[in-house]
Length: 206
Image (cartoon, rainbow, N blue to C red):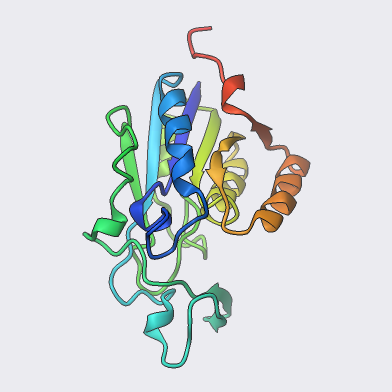
């Protein structure tokens, strides 16, 4: 069965948010259009506690996009974003959320970041997404959302590692860094991920 995974379509990643993805809001219409083609839809959200260790504001003299080492792991420092209960952590108001069956929160541990919708960055704790998808008998995942070169990318990687067939919906994804995203698409193709346009997705009944 095919499933749609919507990654982090939240206000803070939109134009005007604290960590805006260029043209991030342009994917909303595409996602809304493809939702009707899936029987199983899940979404992920960043859900950080205030003072998360990935926030530049947690370190004196550091600024957003600095890179530091935390417990032997390289960490990009971000502007404060998607803080639990904040307006920035909410879904974009234009996103059609009624068909979303389950929402998986990530980045809740203040001591480690979580890009993938499946695990934290140390692969120490599962979000439960893989188990949910297996319970629903989903084996092919169509993945979309923000940002293409960060959370979408790592979600696709973990989907493949978990044994799912992974498909990125290219026109329902926007990256922070366009050039890096081109490199990422080549990497994903090389490891077996398909990259398609939304128009190529057919209803589950056909």
